[in-house]
Length: 219
Image (cartoon, rainbow, N blue to C red; front, top):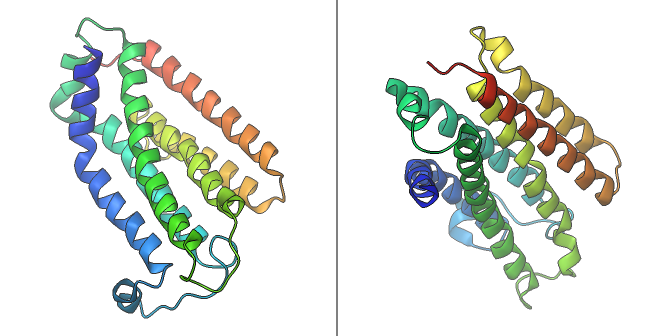
C-alpha cells in the first residue's frame, strides 16, 4: 500500500516538479557562463559564486514558489471530485496516508532544488570557469535556503487541508510561516540558530497537519 501511495503521489506531482526543475536549472545556468541562457535575460555573471552573485536570491524565489505550489497541488488535488473520500477509505490510517504524501513531496522538492545547487557548485568548483576563489563551505547559505523553504511547503499543505471557508483564514498558516521565514532571513542569525528555527517550525506545522487530519470531517 505504501509503495502504491508513493507511486500515486510521484505520478501526480511529476508535471509541476518537471516545470520547477527546468526553472531551477535555468537559475543555475544563468549564474554560470552558459551564454545562451544568460543571453535570454541579457544578464552577465558578476560577483563570487554563492557569495555576491544573484543565485541565492533567485534560488529562494523559485524554490519558494515551487514549494508553495507543490503543497497546494498535493492537498487540494485530492479534493477534486472527492477523491480524498476514496483514498481515506483505503486500509491505511489517515496519519500514514498524509505522512507518505508529505514525505514524497519533500523528497521531490529536495531532489529538484538540491540538483540545481549541486550543478552550480560543480561549475564553480571546476578550475578555469571563473576567476573568483571557491570553497565548498560557500554553498552553505544555498543549502540553508533549500532546507528553510520546507517550512513553506508544509505550511501550504496545511492551508490546503485546513477546514475553513474564508480564504483569509485558510491561508493564515502559510502567511504566518512566510512571515517567520522573512524575519529569520533578515536577522543576523548564526547557521545553527537558523537550522534550529527551521526544524522547530517544520515540527510545529507537521503536528498541526496531523491534528487536522485526525479531527477533520472529510465527508
